[in-house]
Image (cartoon, rainbow, N blue to C red; front, side):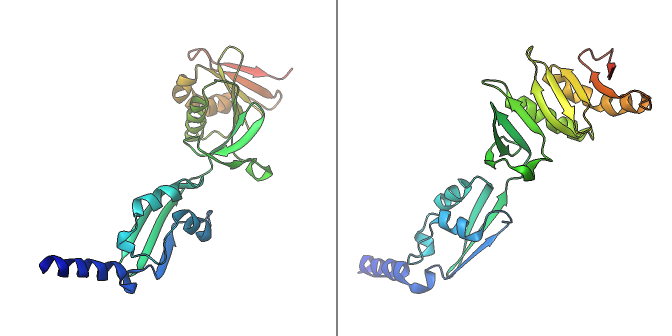
Length: 214
């Protein structure tokens, strides 16, 4: 008899309309629309919220390019709250001429357009290390530099071009954290009144070279 009553109780719990999702709230989104998030979540409006897989909902939402994290909360009796964090455009990844906006982890967010001109461009070819370029761009920004583009030369050395047109030759990408903070002090000491600086060669850390336009 107890088993029968238990079974009836479970059935009534599963079928009680009050536990169906009557209210769905989305928080944390600014770029991705609520409709797109709900479409990816695939919430069954006719099923008890406690019988639905919120972890699977979150995974489907996180498949949206701009979504970083998603957490789905149940609030009885029939409310679901979706809390998301969005990814932030970090750079334009130029891979053999194809340009796409990426976040700091190099996740592709969308195709690049004219509105993305303020983002640094990471130029990579074939199997070149895009991650090292992204790390270098972040280190440059931390040193208050404004990179326009970063790329490898034919020897595998890293060159950064700043928005003022000055190129910085870093050499080994792993040395950028040590070298980037030197750029501004060097430029402050250079008399740029008569000759235009075109590049700073920091490949040899102890002997930086300032190159002027001819």
